[in-house]
Image 1 (cartoon, rainbow, N blue to C red):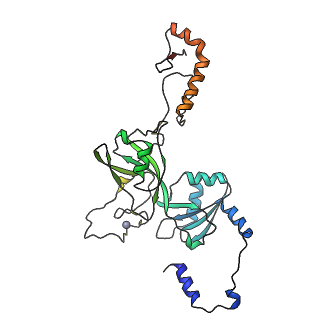
Image 2 (image 1 turned 135 degrees about the vertical axis):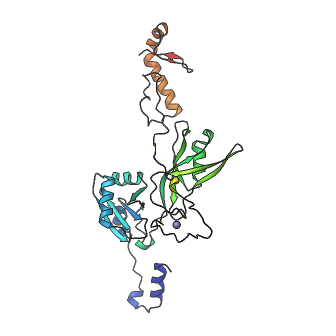
Image 3 (image 1 turned 180 degrees about the horizontal axis):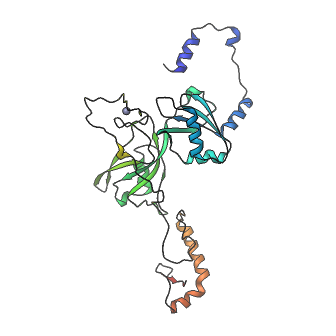
Length: 312
Ligand SMILES: [Zn+2]
């Protein structure tokens, strides 16, 4: 029986007085300030069956998050905290940097909801960066990344270049991971008749159960484990990504014409349209020298449809 059901049952068996029976209508204006303040708050839960050291948690997270403003922590249950940030930018930074862990246990975060009571707050999922290995290059693009990632849950981002391809040794995506379900180990894929198993590796994966794959069985005891029909661990260290290369899919271009302003910026993802405009821009600035360069030995030659040469 849940706590709410227990409370309802207990009060339904009592005879309420007239005063107690009168419903108290709470005016909406009076809850506005709670809603407003809630914008700078988050709810956090350490996924662990034993209570953590609160002070260590607060000090460690404040240090790890390295916020510019202050944070306060209010405990609303075992391993559960209401966080308030002085600066919204700090809250955004913390949300963006997920997943976090404390003492190798996952720290789940969610937006504050003022309509809920503390016992109604549920922590269901946490976003992780996942790498899908053993995919053919043809399978490493945005659309297929979203479909493959759906084997886990909702995909937020697929790391691809400006043309939508994520070519590299694996395809990387950010996806919600259900903390109440076993971690998904991979997906059988069939691309043009070629069947293969793509295995998933999770970046910054905290402790989890090697027997059943749940993130919350972390003390070595697994209630789901039945030694009579499971001879070996079904999950293991191999599900952790040893390291992550966030810039694996880089759009940085080397060589070519130094006048191109898109060079030297690995983060830049330019669409085709912007690229064309930039080329026009380069052309207009260098038209006079192009002729001269054609006569001399060109320092660099672009063999695209806008064939041109620009000296250094
Ligand atoms: Zn388990």
